[in-house]
Every structure is written in structure tokens, then in C-alpha cells.
Amino acid sequence: MTSQAPIRSLTGITTSGTPHLGNYVGAIRPAVRASRQPEIENFYFLANYHALIKCDDPDRVQRSTLEIAASWLAAGLDPEKVTFYRQADIPEIPELTWLLTCVTGKGLLNRAHAYKAALDKNEAAGEDPDFDVTAGLFMYPVLMAADIVLFSAHRVPVGRDQTQHLEMARDIAQRFNHLYGELLVLPEVVIDDNVALLPGLDGRKMSKSYNNTIPLFSSREQLRKLIGSIVTDSRAPGEPKDTEDSALFSIYRAFASQEETTAFAKAFAEGISWADAKQQLFERIDQEIGPMRERYEHLISHPEEVEALLVAGAEKARAVAIPLMRQLRTAVGLRALGAAQATATKTKDPHKDSLPVFKQYREKDGLFYFKLTSTGGQVLLQSKGFDSPREAGQAVKRLQTEGPAAANTLKDVLELPAGIEPATVEEALNRLLNSDNL
Ligand code: TRP
Image 1 (cartoon, rainbow, N blue to C red):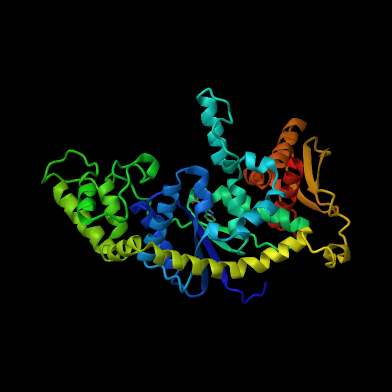
Image 2: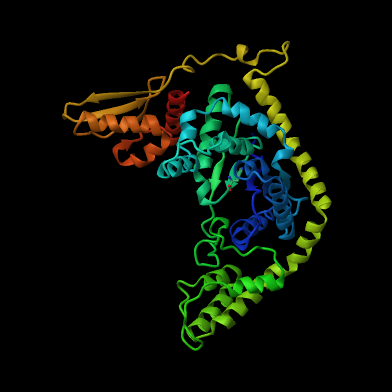
């Protein structure tokens, strides 16, 4: 990596639904805006392999892929300026998924929120814990890690619910690098706290699972009708209205300028009728979405145009993926038999196979301590004094079984010795974590 290498940003969208206004405000619009920044190289892809994990309706997967692609394009994504592709057009993704699978601790995947939630739900229903849980759901984080590291992405803009997946992608890449050399870029999660969380028709977060969405592209008439069905309170025309808990107001704010929002709040205070407020909201949304509608409808009725763009996008993406994949195959030993053995000539690190260790001890002050020591004998982490050996032992246990996440929660009882980088400790804890579970 040279210092001139541009920053690369990458994100994926699972193709299992129809884009709604919440997706537009929370993901599509900010991504299209960000894609216009020239200094960042942007990769956007349709995660149709991920869609298979939650959707077994082939027509739905296909239709959703078209709808999402058409929505992003209609919203202004320029496939000349970014790399826009479909996951399943990149055979290197499942190929890399396998290499990563082989370095991923099963214990790491056991801790994934989505997988755990499925088990908990079964448990609560008195079912077998594995009922209806596919290996695909279990492997979801590995596939996602492959999506990211195959393109050496530095940044991954996602919703907050994806944070753990990004941590796992880092852990998996780190483990791979540890075993085979520094080949993978460790991605960083980017969460934009400024994007609006849009409420849906019933005031809860707009989400397919609540069935309260407004499709991004529906006809003007349908849009007007849906906006008419947003829940409001029973205040009559002329009565001042609350902006605070109003879904209608929040949706308006996500589309309007500062001045428009202030004027709308004033209208609320002055007792605008709900019917008029809905009419204004409808017009404001349509002002932004209306001009995109024609392009969307054109693309939906010409899927072959979208197909051609995606095929060209996949070619661009593979120009990045293929050379890295070739290197990775060689690195792990999937090589032509006559090929030079890169690792045999590499001087072997004598500590490579040994692990950092925790040491527990008692000091003259009568308190119980522990420290984490690197394979080379350097102290990486020093605990404060505990009253009992049991407390010290519990903290060690958590660090061993939960890794860097536990270091964060235990930070009040831990000290970073001078000159030790947090990343070094993170790496050491991940090594222990992975070795534990392999
Ligand atoms: N899991 C992401 C979501 O549900 C979608 C996704 C798949 C993704 N692969 C990715 C996002 C890689 C970012 C990077 O939102």
C-alpha cells in the first residue's frame, strides 16, 4: 500500500425487499451524495448472495435486485464514477469466503447477534435451538467479511445494526494476516449519525418487518394515499399541534431545508389541519422524488439496460478482485506444484505459533493482579489490583472468551503500559480468542 492510494469505501445492500423512503433517507441519498466526492473510490453492490439467507423466493430475489439497482440509478448514482455491481457476478467472493471460513473461529460466529437472536427465539418458543437456523445464517459474517476485504475497502458505511459484522470482518482479516502475511486491509466501520431515522406510517421506525413503509417509488396517487394514512393525534383544525412526537413532522424534516422545517413547525403551532399538513408533506416529498420517478420506471421496464450496467460493473470490480485473489490463493498454498514456495524462504518467526499469555499474581499490597504478556515477553496489558483472586480470574476469563470487546468494558481495571498501542493488544486478544475456538 502506498500513501497515495485513494481511500476506498464499500457498501452492500441485501436484495430481499423493495426500497422505501426510510432506505432512501438512511442509505441511498447519503450514499449518492458521498459518491460525488472525487477523492474517494466508491464500491456499491447488490448483496444477492446475502438475500438467499433470508429469502427463498427466487422471483423476489430477482425482482428486488432490479428494484434496488433501478432505485440507486434513478437517485443519481453514476456507474461511470463508482463501481456498481452484483455480488453473485463476482466468483471470487464465494472463493474467498471459503479461505476466510477456514481461519474463522466457530466461537466467533456463535456470538453473532443475528444468529444468537434466532436461537433465543427458538428457545423462547420451546423449539429445538437450531430449528430453522441455516448454516447460511451462521456464516453470514464470513460472507460479509469476504465482500469487504476482497476489495481492500478502508471504510464501510453501514447502519448501526451492522457494527458487530464489521468487528468480525476485522477479526477475521486480522487472523488471516497473522497466519499468511499482511495481505488484507482491516476495514473501518463508518456510521453516519446525521442521517435521519425515518418513522413509518404507524410512528415506529420505518421497516419492512413492521409493515409500515412508504415505497420510494410509487405513483403520485399511491404516495398521496399512503401519506394520508400516517397516524396523527385527534387534534382538530385550529388546535396547535405537537412537532415532537409527530411522525408526519419527522418525515417532513428529513426532506425539507432548515427554513422549510421552521415554517412547518410554525404552521403546527398555529393549528394547521392534519389534512393540510399531509398535503404539504406529500408535495414536499414528491418535489424530490418526482423527477426520479420517470427514470425509475424506464429502468424497471428495461431490465436489460440495468443488466448491462451491472455486467460492466462486475468487470470493473473483478479487475480489482482477481489479482488479490490470486495472491491469496498463493499465500495459503493453493499453488501450481512447481511454483516457488514463498513461505519456505520466509524466515519463520519463532513466536508465530506460540500465544500471548495471561499471568496472575499477588503483590506485596495483598491485592491480586494479572498481566497479558506477548510471546516475546513484553507486557501488553496490566490490571489494577483486585481484592480476591476470583475477581481477577473472572476478568481474565472474560478477556479470553470475549476478546477486545471485553477489554473495552473492563477498561477501568486495565492499564495500557507506556509505548503499547491499543491495536497491539487488540491483535493479541484476537489471537487468543481465535486459538481458543479453533
Ligand atoms: N449485511 C448488510 C446489511 O444487511 C449488507 C451487506 C452485505 C454489506 N455485505 C456487505 C454491507 C458488505 C457492507 C459491506 O445491511
